[in-house]
Image (cartoon, rainbow, N blue to C red):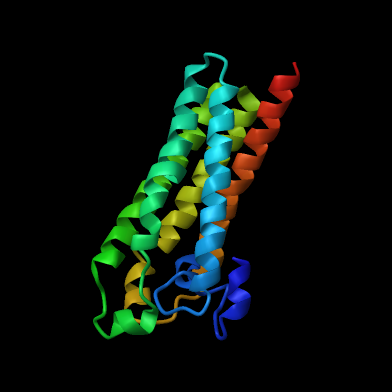
Length: 189
C-alpha cells in the first residue's frame, strides 16, 4: 500500500488497493514484487501453522486454507490485474477483470473460512474476536462489493471505497497477527 506514494492523484480514501497494481498504473512495477514478497511470507506462515498444528485438525485445515489462498490462488494474481478506471470506462474490460473478480471472491471466501477454523481451534475469547472480525469483514465487504464495483468500471467517484477496502484487508491481517501470537504462546507451553 506504500506504493500509492508514487501514484500521482491516487486517493487512499476513494480508490481500491487493486488500482495500485492495475495495468498501466505507475505503481505496478513496485506493487508486483511487494505482492510476491507478501505471498511468500504468508506461505511460510501457513507452513508454520501446519507444523504447529500438533494433530489439531482445525489448525491443519486453517493451514491448508492459507496455503491454498496464498500458495495456489495467488499465482494467478499477476494475470488478473484490472485495468485503470479510465480504460474500463472506455470499454476496455477484458478477461483479466473477470479473473480479478473471481480471485477476489476466492480470497474473501478463504479468508472467512480461515478465520472460522481459527475460531474453532482456540478458546472463547479468540472465538469472540474472530466472530467480530468476520462481521466487520462482511459489513465492509457489502459496502465495497456490488455497490461500488460498477462505479469503478464507469469511472465514477467512489467515496470511502478505499477506506472500506483497507478496513477489510487490515482486519484480516490483524487477525493473522493475533493468531500468530496465540500460536507462539501455545508453543511455549
